[in-house]
Every structure is written in structure tokens, then in C-alpha cells.
Image (cartoon, rainbow, N blue to C red; front, top):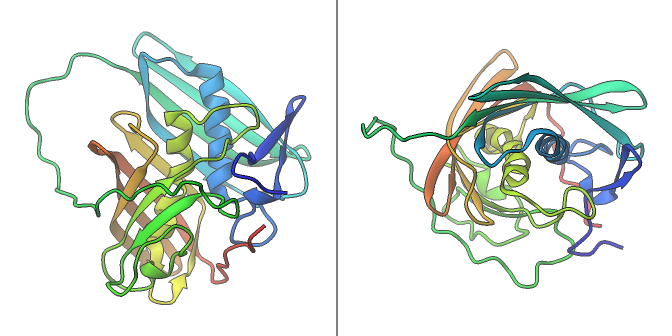
Amino acid sequence: MVTAQTAFFTPDGDLFVPHPVARGPWGRTISGTFVGGLLGHATEAAAGDPEFVPARFTVDLCRPVGLDVPVRVHTTVLRESRRLNLVDAVLTQDGAFAARSTTLFLRRGEQPADEVYTAPVSMPAMPEIPDPIPDKLATVVWTYGREDHIPTPGAGLTAWEHSGPKHVWIHDFRPVVAGTELTPFVRAALAGDIVSSLANFGPSGLQWINADYTLSLSRLPDGPLIGMAATAHFSDAGVATGSATVVDRLGPIGSGQASALANPGFAPPPRM
């Protein structure tokens, strides 16, 4: 049974057992969204410090992660100093390497007074979070693109099936690991994988599968909603890079980028 409180993973000793709700759109595997969320959870547990900002979070998705086998995450602090920490997290399944993340934490400090140019970004107004949230949803997203599409929770990604601007608001509400709370860092880690879908979606749907994603953040998101505006897609010979600006209720907070390979066959998982 799936409820609104069902977590994507349940701890079992030093293992994490995936729940079927973690299924992704590329077969019976765990979505890269939740792989990244688990890596973010483990990284924060190992090295989270309120004086430091996770300024760069990069996830490499090197092989499919099966939905039916527990996974293990091992973290290593590669560098720890007064102004920066660098943390590596490796996810394995049945002893085989599957994914990894590297996170650069930078210490907060005094803000310079200069104004520095940045390209403007506009976002649709923040939506109202439904109450209650339908149990069938793994994540609540509102997608914006085609003018004839009315964004509603659970409406899917068809709004992005065009060649124009695309936006999304995201509300993650399920715990990544049972018995834990969603923190701002873990919310950001979960949202990062959506950069690829947002930036690389076209009139025929999503023809690209990402091999990585990177979030670069000036600060952690404020509040339960994270927004993104697609900024670029460049591709040639079946290789693509896509990018997006990341915002919260107060405004832009950073950017995301993903590398992808041509891979038709995107299909959202069936409702649980």
C-alpha cells in the first residue's frame, strides 16, 4: 500500500531497500531523481554543517539501479578545511558501482556590495499545494509550456511537448529514507534530476536520458517549492547538454545542468 508518507527507501542495517514508488520512467529501475536524493541524504548526514552551503552537487548516473535489490551508500570526506569541504558518496548495488555524487560545501561569509549582471528569468506564479496530496503521486509537479495546457498536480509532462519555453514547480513531500525529514539540501538533490527532462523535452516527448546532473547553488531553497526555467538545450550526434535556472519563493538561487544521450522510450511508471 502506498500512502503520502511512504518513503522511497527503508533502512536495513547499512542497506537501503527501495520501495516500488521509487520506480523511474526507463523500465523497472529506480529513478535518477531518487538516486540523487539518497546520495544527498547520505552526504548531508556525513558532512552537513549550517555554516556551509552545498554550492555544487554533481551526480553521475553510471548504470541502471534495479528496483528489486537493496543499495548501499558509502561517503568519504575528501577535503575538509576552514572555507570548503569536499564530500564523495558512492552508491553500489550487489557490490557493483552504480552512481556517485561529489558535493562542494563552501563557508558562508560577508556579502560584497557590488551588483553583478545576471540574465533575467521569469517564472509562473507559485501554485497552491493540494491538501491532501493524492497518495498515487511520487512527487507533485506543475508543468508549464504549451499555451493550451492547464498546469495541475498529476497532469504529467505533456506541457513540455513543444519547442518553446518550459517551466516547472516541484513539491517533494515523501521522505527519501523512512524515519527522516526532508531537508532543504535533500529537496534540492531531488529536484536536480528534473533539469534534464525540462531542458531536453521536445515536441515528440523526451528523447534523451541523462548520464549526470549538477546543481550549483548560492544558497539552499527556502520553503517547500522549487522552480526551474529551462535556459538552453544544445545537441549533436546523439549527445546533449541542457541547463535551467533554479528558483524558490524568494527568487533565483542557482542553476542546473545535465549531460544526456539520445534514448527514445521514455514512459512514466504506472500508478501504484
